[in-house]
Amino acid sequence: MRAFACPACAAFTPFEADRCAACRTPVGLHLPTTSMVALDGDAVRVDGQRWIRCTQAETLQCNWLVPDEHVDAGQRGRCLADSLIRREPDAADTVAREKLVPTTAALRRLVFQLLDIGLPVEPYFRRTGGLAFDLLSSFSEDRPVTIGHADGVITIDLVESLDAYRESLRVRLGEPYRTMLGHFRHEVGHYYQNVLVETGPGAQRHLTECRALFGDERAGYGEAIDRHYRFGAPADWQDTFISEYATMHPWEDFAECFAHYLHITDTLDTAREAGMVLHADRVRFRAPRDVTPSPCYDDASVHRLLDDWAWIALFFNRVNTAMGKPPLYPFTIPPPVADKLDFVHRVIREER
Ligand SMILES: [Zn+2]
Ligand SMILES: [Zn+2]
Image (cartoon, rainbow, N blue to C red):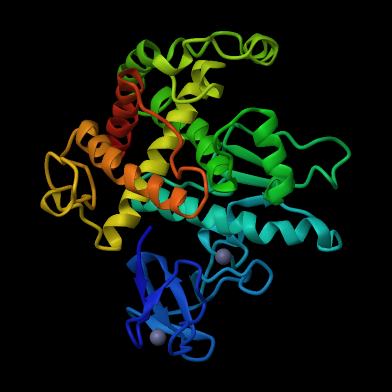
């Protein structure tokens, strides 16, 4: 994630800020320039165009700006991220709506990164099968909300934004990591597998390689779920998979790898934006080289990216344990998973 600066005083400004913490200048996120801009009253002019706050500024604490003379009715005066929400709890359901705030904060992070790495974000109201989010609460609907993806529509259970609920599920399922942002990154992986690998212009070529790496996605999905929840992951799953869940079905393996690609690249980029570098001659232990996270690993192989990540993750894991928390990135990447991440890396790079 980018480390933004206040346009008035240059103080560090977090991604979610609507006001500079140092000088109190009202700010908003201007997507075309990926920068924080200062608002004069309730608007700002950028490149001759008037920009105002997203209509969800109050209700969802959104700090994104939208062009004043917005013509796309489907967007409803919302920023791109919030306009992707197709279904959300009714205004009267205040308990569920409270959970929308942290959930949409994760959604905006997701959308910003997707655009930042050059992936197409085509909303459902512009194209059939385009990206949509149904953000619903298991506590409000007649039946449990199942997190998942189908034909561009990603469903998220808002109840998962409750720490105690999500943590109890995490422990019950034996997962080392479970977050809202992680759910978004995983589910959007299903969407991009369909858009970039299964149906895009490179589909024929990609699909053959994808099946060789992840397995044949035409394998029965229902039986795969039954098998996974009855018998669990194979004993040696860590040799070839990033997580136990990834063993369930080739689609889940791809989505898990896609999510990890987004975890890794965003965290590396956050370190780079903070100016973090590992100087090999300044540490007590043997480090083979200086590690300088790159702004974009476009020209590098995934192995360079993963090697940089191995070093940065090592320290972030130690930082977390210094605070008495579990490691930040509690995963190991065996060579077959590196090959899968390489595939994700190349498919995304080609799209850009
Ligand atoms: Zn400031
Ligand atoms: Zn918004």
